[in-house]
Image (spheres, one colour):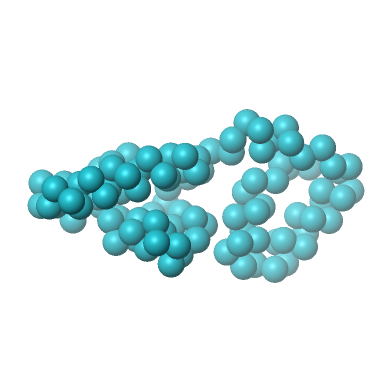
Length: 103
């Protein structure tokens, strides 16, 4: 879909989705939201997870500063948590892995 082909309501919806994505730390633009409008709408309606949306679109997520500094777990515990999440392989686990700092 192209921006100039969208209705006024769709343009407003795309802008709203962009703001919610950016609040979640997803780095994208309104033109990219328009390009992947159907996927973005699925994410906005919670039909798909953020990890699934990022897989489909190739967008990236910046880790919030508080997330990076928040995890003050011993390295052994952190390695174990990362291993368990990696073994699970679910979308939610992949999303959680993105938020954990590297050991």
